[in-house]
Amino acid sequence: MRMIEGVKIKPLRVIPDERGLVMEMLRCDDEIFEKFGQVYLSVAYPGVVKGWHYHKLQTDYFTIVRGMMKVVLYDQREDSPTNGEINEFFMGEQNPILLVIPPLVVHGMKAIGTGPGYLVNCPNLPYNQENPDEHRIDPHSGVIPYSWERKDG
Image 1 (cartoon, rainbow, N blue to C red):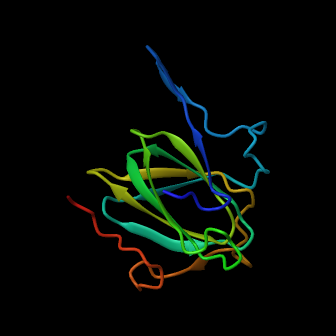
Image 2 (image 1 turned 90 degrees about the vertical axis):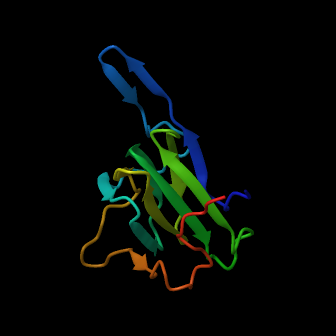
C-alpha cells in the first residue's frame, strides 16, 4: 500500500502487568504532535459506517482503544503526489496504532467484529459549533471510489 502523503502511523506499546495495562497514545514531545485541540470518544456499532468526512484545517489523531475498526482514507487533494490513493487500516486491540490524518484527506471508519469500536481522537483544533470544520460525503454515494462491503476470499 502506498501511504497517502502526510499520513503517519505511530505503533503503540501496550504495557500489561498484574494490575491491568497502560497504553500511551500521544505525547507533546512526539515528532508527530502539532498542538492540542480537544479529546473525544466516538463509538461505532458493528457494521456501521461513520464517514465520509474531512476537515479543511484540522489534523486528526485516531486511536481505537476498544474493539477493532477499519479506518479508510482517500486523498482528494488535487496538488498531492498521492491524489486518488486509498489507504485501509485495521486498527484496535489486535493492532494498537495511532493514525495521523492531515487536513483535506477524506476519512471514514467502520466497526468490524462482533462488538462496537471505540475511537479516541485528539485533534489539533477544538470543535467550533458556530463554524464547524466538518465536511461530509455520503459513504454509499460512489463519490469516493471505495466499497464499504466486507471483502471475503
